[in-house]
Image (cartoon, rainbow, N blue to C red; front, side, top):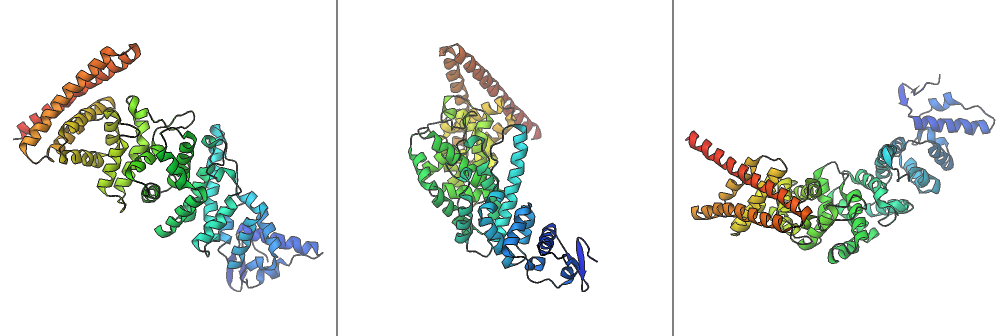
Length: 463
């Protein structure tokens, strides 16, 4: 008796997945066209060969079965059954009908319904990455990449400059999800080859050279395309931070530190919500908010915290220092906000390096603006006080420490006077902003010194 979904055969039970059942249906049709009934019992009772039930189908009929069957996940499982079936699946993917069915291209979906559709299509490409990983398992890395590139070249939204509306397109994100699942578990040497292959196919290195040596904002479209390609294809979809750090290192390390800072700003810096263009004056024209700096801070922490052997602490600190003058010197408030968002370790290491180099006056002003950011963004002011005391210990002598603390007191006075002069000399709108900033600065000074007094009192009482 024919059983479903399993069939007892000589004391064993063979489980038939839906795809096998589909192929058995094709066999039934094949027998019916010959005017015969399908001998399901006999075929089910046979010892399976290398292809199982599928052994009785021609290559064309196998492809027809795959064309009817819709689940990429099960095709991925089937590809591991045998080398022959694996080759049949590769051949099917290479056909125009196969690539058309598998490479979904519904990449432009606005609104709530669009977000749901984008989630579905991203999941599809996640599974498709696994299918291609298994299908090309026996090929050398370069041949695997060439085969995949040949298939994906049919889709314009997967190309660097292929989509006419890149801000509304999920094509590069699908490509990134696919790439992540394809390369999961590959060693670093293989991933190096993937990056080099992508650079070769997209001419990415030359495009990066153009934007890092051009005047900021003079190649806006290329800056946007580079940002979208790097974020969506190479950086954003990894589950582990170490993987993201690996790919970010591939992007940055070939360049001198000045160009690394420029690239970091292009890829993670603030952008216009309307057209996605990089806002180069954001850090220069006035105080910015956390959202504009969060991407940069996360990237800096990624390189510092993941223990990547290609990045020392000094490398990361030098990068942060260089970043604060892209495209020109930032407002100290924005610099301080970046340090706070980057975390305690980076903030301390950055400031300690200035202390070691004898830049006490510059360091004192930074303490003042750390206090201002704590006041504005509602961080605990005792954090700024503790950071100052921690920096004090970097100075080797009592005279140096006293000099530094005096510089901090003087810096508060100088900054308040500067803000007052700006408030008095600006136009009406600017005057309001400057007075508000002055208001926050006065409160920051008061709360900072209050925390110093609390700390002094607690230390006195404890002794």
